[in-house]
Amino acid sequence: QVQLVESGGRSVQAGASLRLSCAASGGTFSSYSMAWFRQAPGSQREFVAQISRSGRNTYYGDSVKGRFTISRDNTKATVDLQMNSLKPEDTAVYLCAAGPAATFHYWGQGTQVTVSS
Image (tube, rainbow, N blue to C red; front, side):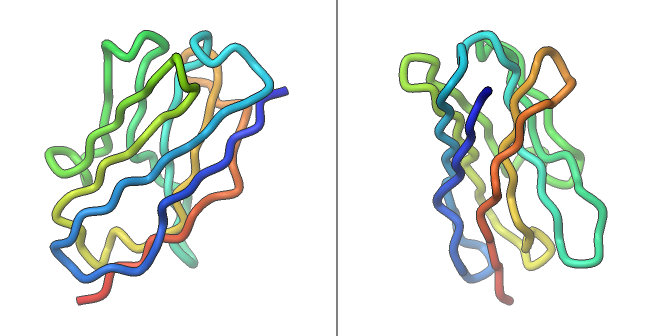
C-alpha cells in the first residue's frame, strides 16, 4: 500500500509561482508513474501532469503546458510540481497520484491552491 502526502499549497496572487511536493511511502517509488490532478469546486477532476517511472518522460494538460513542470526524485520518493505564472483558474485542490503506467491506484488527500486576481 502506497501512502501519498501532498504539501506546499497556499494562497497566492495571480502571476506568482508555487511549488507543490508529494512524499510517497509504503511502496517501491521507482516502480510507479506519478501524476498530479486537480479538482475545483463543482468541477470534474482534471489531469495536470504525469511523469514516467524514470523521470525521462513527462506529459501535461493543455491548460498548464508551458507554465507547470513536474519532476521526481526516486532517491527521496518525492514528486514535485513547479507552477509558474499562476492564474485564478488554477485554483483547486491538487492531488498526487501513483500507479503502474497511466492507471492510478493510489491518491493523496490533496493540498489547496488558491490564486487571487
